[in-house]
Image (tube, rainbow, N blue to C red):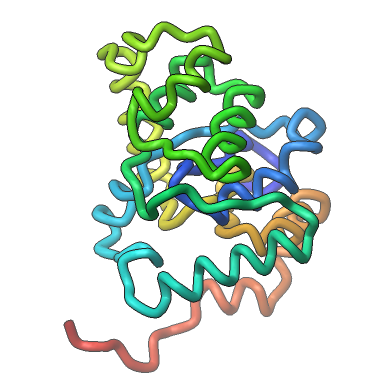
Length: 212
């Protein structure tokens, strides 16, 4: 399946500042590209892959915060970190699902946490957003909402997702905010991923493997 064919999904978690930055690039072209935003639990992806998140590694955590702030300033994007990070994003993810996963819901939640710098780690913290979206707070704890979030996350893991944000065009995955232009180029020119050197890289053998 080429990058131009099949489903087009954007896997993300509100815990990620990179997802917030990528959303600013993707949002204006969401309808044109026919991409579906899909909220997932990043922590579950990390567990499935046996990885740590950037915020779990001393040094990388602080660098990530400064780097994302620098990128936001460079691109003219308002960014203010919430009171603590990492935080538990489950309530925010469930709110997004309860609100139908619409672009407007994604906008509102990202805006609250990453533009306004407010806490997003529970129903009480998110109450102003819940009210603005017209959602019954009980919907966040509904079994259907929980099941939808689990299904989204399972689908991401099954597709091979290993980080957020990730764009999925057909069978191809494009990870990270900085892969945005690569993804759009591959979408417009599917042959890009099938030239001899690109294909050779998919089969490149390991020269050495670190012992666990």
